[in-house]
Image (cartoon, rainbow, N blue to C red; front, side):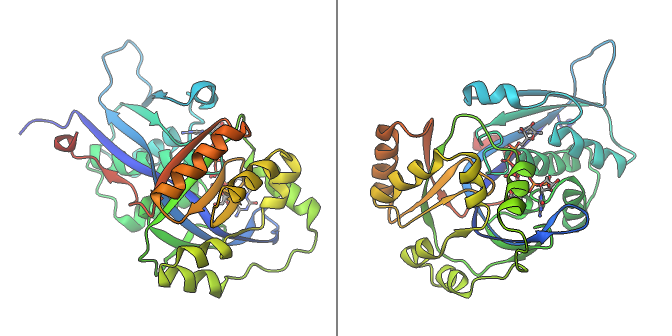
Length: 313
Ligand SMILES: C[C@](O)(CO)[C@H](O)COP(=O)(O)OP(=O)(O)OC[C@H]1O[C@@H](n2ccc(N)nc2=O)[C@H](O)[C@@H]1O
Ligand SMILES: Nc1ncnc2c1ncn2[C@@H]1O[C@H](COP(=O)(O)OP(=O)(O)OP(=O)(O)O)[C@@H](O)[C@H]1O
């Protein structure tokens, strides 16, 4: 038997179809009703044995990708969420040996699409496999919740409702496939800053509640109905911090989007399209508007974190 030399896990970005935000809790978090939807925009997390070096940290880290200046904002030290995830798996197993983690990033950094959380979910699965740690899906979900509110969802993917801080997941009845356009922004938004702005703008927010119309649209696989039902309580706060995003949303709507929304804490904006051809038209109009840094067209829902079979490449 040959020893495993590398494991690669593919892990999806998310958009929030509904994000209902309650008042700030005593621990600083907010209770949410968070309808997560995974889209086919993937980071890849690879774990391998390190090249021999004089001094080995438990987890070495490198990053690549086509994200221009965004890539420089990915921390390469112990604070990286993927490195933290690897160390959590190591804590749970006696078989952990030093590893190199490589992140190939396509998900925008600090873009409201949970890129760091996706990498953390990928690292949980990759390290569990690489070290044969034997952690169950439930164990991985528990470790994910220790790392952040958005980390559990990319483990499961699809479409799911998150409650609590967003980490308690219930799969949604959502048989449809949807066409999306994402308008990427220059720079990012800090998630705590956006929640802070939400508290400032909306003191005394009510407890968050689900939207039956959105869930019915998902169950019916009806894109037009879904587009009309998209909602994000953080959108006003994101627009307050980045007023330029209002023009991005307006440009996508004018180009025929069925729905337009800030993705999570922003600044990425998401547009639902009626077809792949409509999505291409909306992306072209956004590109021509000069209001965003780049566009990505893709589909949802997508699978959660999966080990890539080397034979597939
Ligand atoms: C906006 C979303 O992306 C929507 O999916 C998430 O709620 C954010 O999840 P995340 O980035 O994993 O956030 P965490 O790392 O758990 O928390 C970062 C910070 O965001 C704020 N935060 C996050 C989640 C939550 N339910 N309430 C919050 O107030 C808190 O200030 C917290 O200190
Ligand atoms: N693997 C990682 N990839 C990207 N950023 C990371 C990573 N690990 C830690 N970070 C830090 O986390 C910050 C937020 O990055 P991330 O890309 O996860 O934001 P986000 O997509 O807005 O998150 P969310 O949607 O979950 O709120 C970055 O500015 C960076 O400093």
